[in-house]
Image 1 (cartoon, helix red, strand yellow):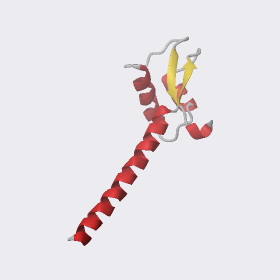
Image 2: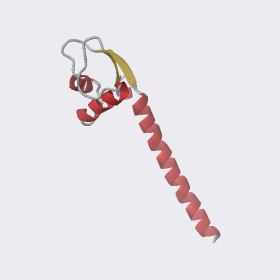
Image 3: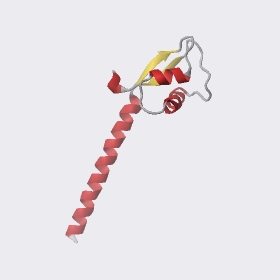
Image 4: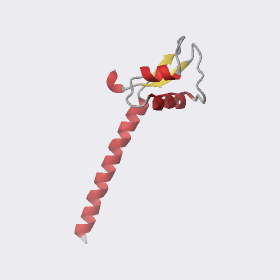
Length: 90
C-alpha cells in the first residue's frame, strides 16, 4: 500500500513538473513582444515574417490579430501594433 502511494506521488510530481515547465515556455513566448509602427507596404503577413518566430507565419499572423484585437487583415500606415518576437533573437 505504501509502495503504491509512493509511486503515485512520484508520477504526480513528474507530471506536474512537466506541465509547469511547458507553461513557462508558453508564458515566455507569449510575453516576448515589441511595438511596431506600420509603414507603407506593411501587411500582417510581412510583419509576421519579420517577427523571426519559428513555425508557420500564419500562426504569427493570428497571434498579431489576437494581441491587437484585429478581426480582419486591414492595417493602416501609422498603426501601432504589438508583435510577438523570438526572445532568443534579441
